[in-house]
Amino acid sequence: MSVTTTTTVYGSPHPRIRVLVADDHEVMRMGIRNLLQLQSGWSVCAEASNGQEAVEKAFQFRPDIIIMDVTMPVMNGLQAAQQITKIEPRIPIILFSLHVSDDLYRHLKSDGIRGAVSKGDAARDLTQAVEVVLRGGTFFPDRKTASPA
Image 1 (cartoon, rainbow, N blue to C red):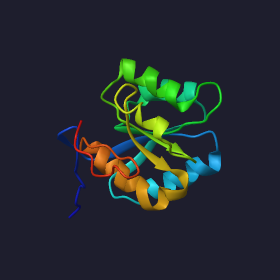
Image 2: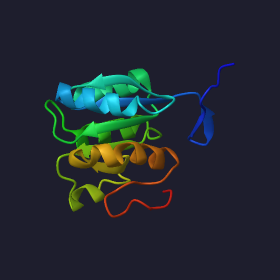
Image 3: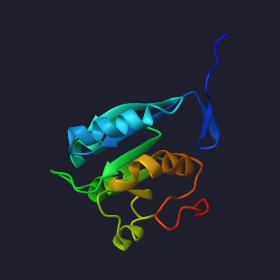
Image 4: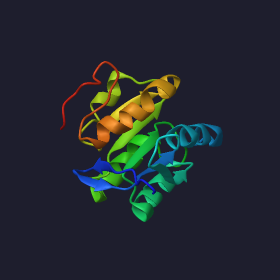
């Protein structure tokens, strides 16, 4: 007998959580993918190495959530988040950066950014951030218990 893992995404059950990972460093994308795919029912549906590619793949694959580096070539993560949110506002975005600053907080609602995780804290925080954001909450350092928007 097989058991199907079901997770609630946007208020309805989905058999899988599909994640788009955007980072310009291949090793970082591999690490994120390996970390996320340890979670039952989670998969990386696409990867992008720059902001423009992230926008294109977001529309092509329609992931449940996007993990996006801030500093990338062609288009940075904030610009990519802004473009994605204009067309597909239901896809939440978690910024992934070496330095999570107060400046990121102002992008919370306007650019579809629902969380931020420091690359140095990824092993501890990234899966929790995805879970909180998919339940409708926000995840920011020192603001991890924020209520749904």
